[in-house]
Length: 116
Image (cartoon, rainbow, N blue to C red; front, side, top):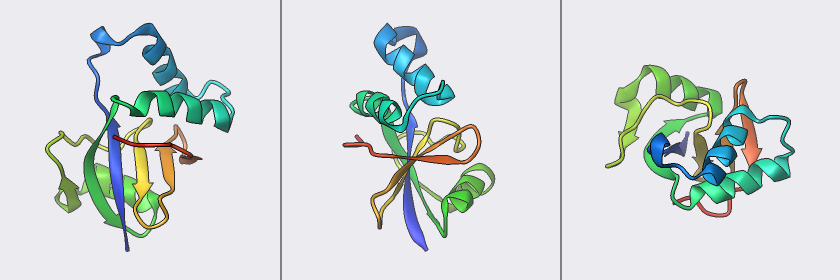
């Protein structure tokens, strides 16, 4: 089993700058973005937008998604509230350091420079 860290967005939508808001909308809905554009937007957002909210021991990303939505007792939470795993969340594999974003269908591998 691998430990996966879940990073979820933390923002008051009423106080988001238009640049961050636009980047977030593009990330969530992936309006035909290339992987490079997606990574650029994610790197803009990770500075203070995403927070580590929990960790899950699992065999793969699908299992992380399942546990994060159905079995909260298996989620190691942090001081940041954990919500169900949803589109736009980042999942970091602590062994390979590969980061994936939860997409509308499945996951998209992304290269995030640094996660807060």
